[in-house]
Image 1: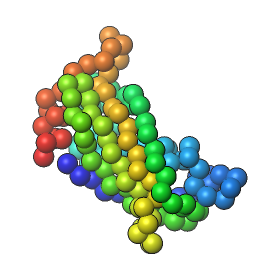
Image 2: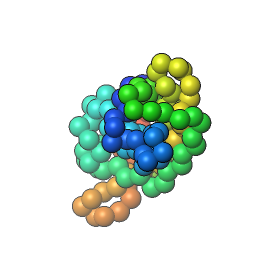
Image 3: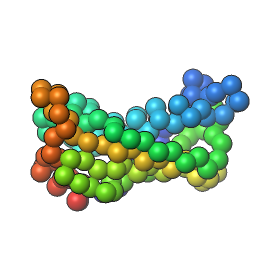
Length: 131
């Protein structure tokens, strides 16, 4: 499973040092994740085969600066697929220079908002990860 989307860096993504802020990288990754889910047929993170998705952990490794007006190509793939979730791996590359800007990982688990508990991954979703 592999997905790719391009996101523009907005002025609100820039920090006081004049480059892409670390908080903005997570927001951009969130947008990329939502686009990926939509490509799989899910309207958002709270409607995935009757369950929701929650981010359990995050890791970011910065490789280069990015600036206002740059376009970042996010490449996403699933890894470490388990009974309750998976890791979503992101690579953010400057679309013009082809420099890698960041690598991210979000650990995602399925959550039943009715029972307020972690839930097993639905088989229909697992099937989409294996395509």
